[in-house]
Length: 124
Image: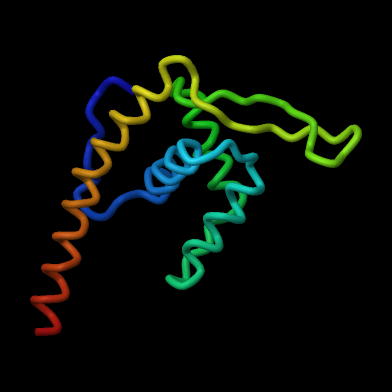
């Protein structure tokens, strides 16, 4: 996680995009996996993007492996026996998350410039 994120040279990879949003959603409130998936699907519905279950969980697992997030099991609200896995930052995770977000911001700026150039060159 300490090394600088390398650009693919083209557009941002889906997993990096999802990890960015998962970090931000974790900052806003503690959510469980399926709720995170629902929120992402609702947010991106107007753009025709519907992240699938496996990609969201792979991104969550990457964040766990990177030492950013950890899993916390809690009883589901209103349920007697059902447990839900919530995600929260590890002790050092918040600092690592902020570094990741700064790196991704630079990458998103580069991708946005690439898309702007394509629009200007081809549709002006």
